[in-house]
Image (cartoon, rainbow, N blue to C red; front, side, top):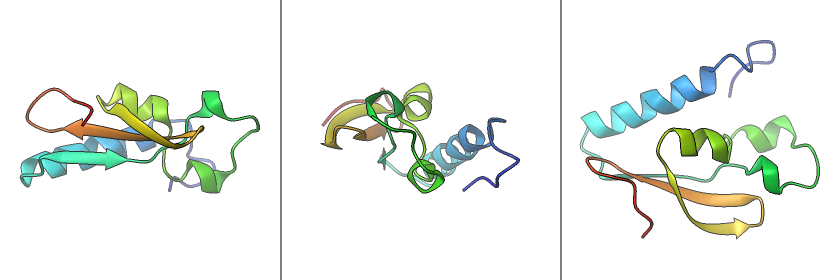
Length: 87
């Protein structure tokens, strides 16, 4: 979680990029995230909702949506060592 006052500076994206790099360096084959899709929400999300990150941030990092657990909660995956694929 990024501290209030430090948000909207790209810190979450840098943390996600670091997690992807760490996973790749340690032999992970796939990563999965359960972010919030802000475009699908009817109301403004709380900070607790954003703890998981946003779908747009995961998409920019190369993750692909594979399904949704709720209208505003996609499951996104990134296959490491190759293109992202939905499985």
